[in-house]
Length: 176
Image (tube, rainbow, N blue to C red; front, side, top):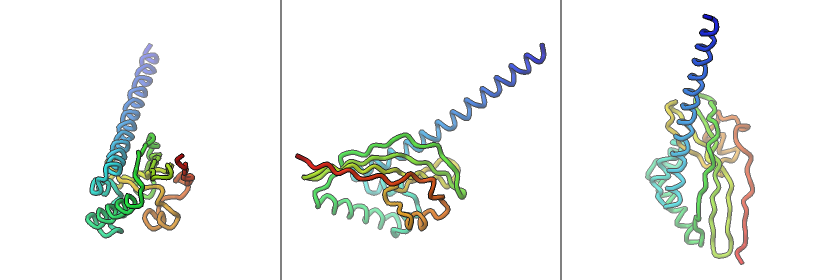
């Protein structure tokens, strides 16, 4: 009889632990999703400082600090607008399960940006690379479309390249 109770206790304890780990994983994915959504919304709304706030700190440092990064982003977006382009939408997929590498945690967030100008609709499938350096779930991002092998080595030299999804082709659809 005591063996039956022991088995029931062990099974119950295992089930409880599994739900606790699942809840932690769900909370972490929600944290990534919320931070990525904040950055995407900032991009769509032209909130340059808001977008810089969600950017991986080393990228900001390489751009000369927050103020200069914000000005550079604003200038680039103004140039894009002057050429007749506008962002229609940014769609985010579900974040991938976080994985550790070189003392950081990473997650891949699928992203598709749709832009248009007078003559075409442009769909850019890509991803955001979510990075947490504090072990507490504070996430910042690098736009996957900007990660060439050279920039990856410069910004994230310890990230194994096989952890990143392959580049996808931009789709340009002429307007009628």
